[in-house]
Image (cartoon, rainbow, N blue to C red; front, side):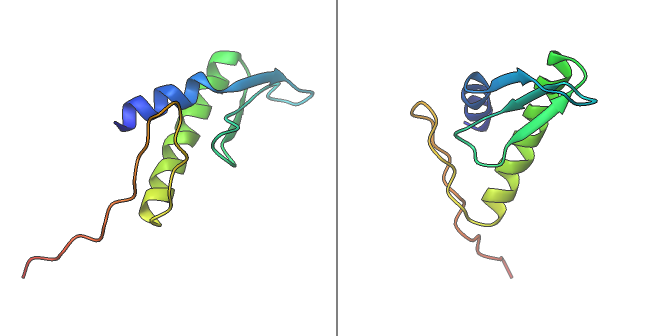
Length: 84
């Protein structure tokens, strides 16, 4: 499910060329704060996917909800019981 979520989110990415050392800029508007740059469009895309993966991990670790993307939803895990 996480792979499917990443694929759907990457399909929503928007890219543009900016006046910067790394001129390619990409973001995923549905995932607040997920953006990246790169020297090439492909580098920007790889960087954006890496940022997205980290964003997902942090949100799940904090128990935060991820926005559904095209019907794909990931819910935070409930606390696991420790076995003694």
